[in-house]
Length: 116
Image (cartoon, rainbow, N blue to C red; front, side):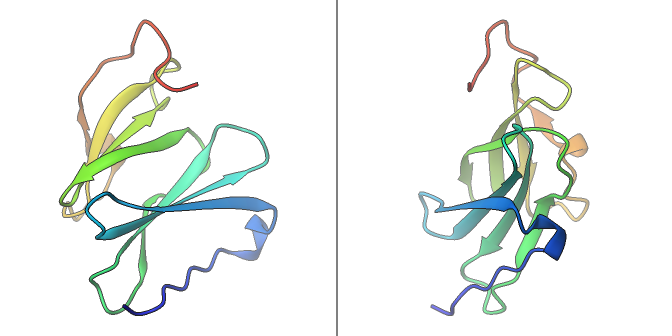
């Protein structure tokens, strides 16, 4: 396996990065938060891609995006984007638009918070 190099712009020097490998062992999911707000960026690296380049999935610090899991290229996230008490959506890495706003919603806003 080739090493993975992940670089963030200098303005995220105070950011915290968290990384985990998916259960299928294929992807490295990197979340970045700045400060203590529940807002984060998400980058995903396909570990079978020799370039090791991270794909930006969520590129703005506007909402909480907590990875739940994946099946192939389809990833499930809990988010407060459009739902202050969280909802579950999928984002497919195979979609060229790779937009959470084109994602498939699995739950509408829940009565109780999904992740606290």
